[in-house]
Amino acid sequence: MNYAAQSLPIEHNLRGFYQLLGFGNEKNCRYAWVRRQKSKNKWIPLGVNKSGKTALSSPKDVFSSVATTSIETFKNTDFYISPNEFFDWRCQKQLARLHANYIEIDTNNHQVLDDEQAETVCNEVLSQIQNQDIPMPNAIVKSGSGGLHLYWVYEAVEAYAWRQSVWKEFADTVRNKLGNGELWHVDYKATIDPSRLLRLPGSSHSQSKRTVKAYILTPERFSFDELMHSVGINPERPSYLKPIPTKTKKVETTAFKQERVARGKRSKHNIKEWWLKIYWEVVKHARAQGVKKGQRDSAAFILFVSLLHIKPNADEALEDIKSLNNEIIGLDEDELCSYLSTAIKKKYRYRKSTLATYLEQSLSMNTAFLYELAIKVRLTPEQVSERRSIGAKMTAKVKREKTLQRLKSILASTANMTLKQLSKAAGVSLSTVKRYKKLLTEDRVISSVSI
Image 1 (cartoon, rainbow, N blue to C red):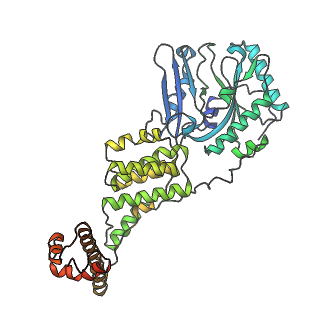
Image 2 (image 1 turned 120 degrees about the horizontal axis):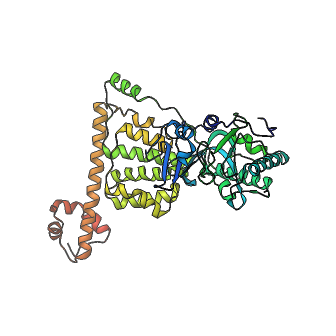
Image 3 (image 1 turned 90 degrees about the vertical axis):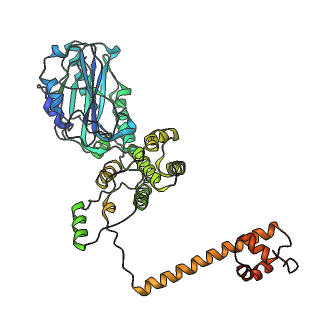
C-alpha cells in the first residue's frame, strides 16, 4: 500500500470507485437514498435483503444513469449510498458486512466553498494525514460543497459486534489525529456510524450544483486487520466470545435422493417428529455457535414455528420460546412478540427445500440433517416377542398401581367398608379386591374390623 500520495489524481474515476467498494456484488444489501424536492424521497435497496425485497441487481440501474445524466436533470435531487451491507433494514443492529471506514470532512457552518477554498481544504487534509502518519485512504470523494469523504476500503468482513467496536475505534483515532481547520472540521456523528449514508459519486449536490467526484489514490484494498494495526489498534476477537462458526459444505440433495432410491427404502416420519428434529438442531446450533444480532429474529421465528407443531397449544409454545429467548436469543420481550405475531395467527408449513434455504441464509446452518435417511432396523421374531413381553409387563404394572391407588382413595374417605362394598365402589371384581387385601391391610388403610 502506497502512503506517500501528496495530491489527488486529475481525473474523476467513477467506475473505479464503484469497483473498489464492490457495488453490484453484494451478498446482502446496501441502500441508496434519493432526496427530491418536488416528489417523495425514495429508498432503493441494492442487492437482496433478508425480507426478499430488491429493487436493483447491479449498479447499471441507477448509478450509471446518474453518472451519464446532465447535472441540470438532477439539480433538485441528491443521491446517497451506504458503503457497508445490511441483513435487512439500514441500522447498526442489521449490519452484515463492513467494506470500508470513512471520515466525513464538513465545511464550517455548512457553507458552500468556492473552488479555491475547496482546494485549500483538500490540501490541508492530505497534509495532515501525512504529518500524523495515518495511512493514505484508497479514495477521496469531493462532496460538492467543498467537503470531503475519505475512504479506507478493505476486503469485506463480517460485521460482528466486536468488529463494529474496532471500526468505531479506528474512526475515533483518525478523527482525533486530523483535528480541524479554519474552513473545515470532521463530522463526528457521520464518521463514527458504520450504517451511515454518504453522497454518491456521479450525482449532483443540489445546493452548489457541482457534481460529486471520486478520486482513486490506490485500487489496492487494505485488509481489515492491516488497517487497524496501522494506527495501533488490536483487531483481535475477544477471548471471552465463542469461536466463529466454520461453514461446512452441504451434501447435495440429489445425492440423498439417489441413495434412497438405490436402497429401495424411504425415510418416514410424522409431522411432530419432523419439527422436533428441526427444533433441537436449531437449539443445538444456537447454543454451540451463538446467535448474531442480525439473526435473532430468524432464530426466534423458526423455533416458535417448530414449537407450534410440537406443543398442544400456542400458549405453551409461547412460554417455551420466551425461556429460550432469555437463554440464547436475547431479544426484548416486546420485540420477540412482535416478530412472532404472524406465526401465532398462521400455522406455517415449509417444503424441505424452502426450510433448508431459510436455515442456511438466515442462521448459517448446515442443513444436511434435513436429508438424513431414517432407515428402520427389522427385528427378528424372537426380538419382537421379547419386546412385547416387556411391554405387557410394564402395562400390567402401571394398571396395578392405578387400581391400588383408587382402592386406597375410596377407603380413605369411607370408614367400615366391606370388601364387597369396596368392589362395587371401585368398579372392579371382588376377586381383584381380595388380591389387594394384604397391601391395603399392611398400609393400615383398612382393618380386620371393617372387613
